[in-house]
Image 1 (cartoon, rainbow, N blue to C red):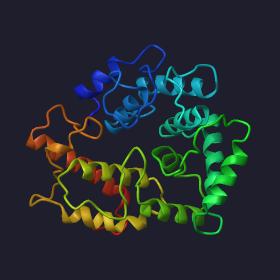
Image 2: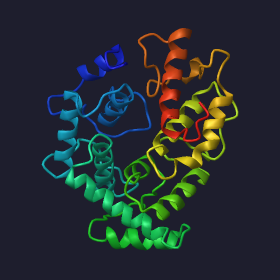
Image 3: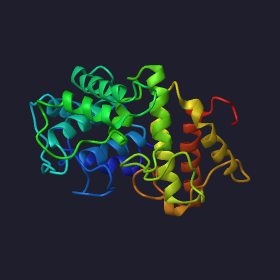
Length: 283
């Protein structure tokens, strides 16, 4: 319902002929260069765009060619971690958020599933096992930089359908109790809901839950989130995250963000999330 918004039109108008928007990374900032490729496709996905849309098809083709070495992203190579491993991770994650039949992206997902499954083979997280599996897997590729933590948007998204049920349950528990949340998405423990609902923090928290809602075998563990959302309905049985939630990432969805449109946007987003996680039927 938001695909014809002016926000979508502005983003699509900036897409280059090769399918990119110029620089690929950064996910964490809403406005840059004036927009990066992953910022653009994240925003378009939030606005309802799928692989059926030409702009997404072009972007996926571009990312596939970068992933397979036919093209290279124009980004400056960051030195804080191994850029080649990180780039492979980013590209694969975004491809798989739209399609599940890309062989190269699926190979990356399988690699990370092995590393993370090894780290949780005892039923709880072992950092030594994680380091060992990571080093062995990437021994031929790693060229310096810090080892990439797996509690970030990329791995959490990538692994949602790749883990065996018992491993997924352990990983899910670890994620929601991780004191620093999910890197790039929300920086506090997910097991504690925000104290004040009408804030940008709540919007980002919901973003983390939206990411976790793809873990089909574990969404029953999010019942406390359903309870929190239901407690924050207004008298009209709708939701309002407040004007400060406007971050040009998750919101706005409507062209206008005056009170009525804002409430409509918030309600649409939360109802869509509840459709996925409310297995107890509280709505």
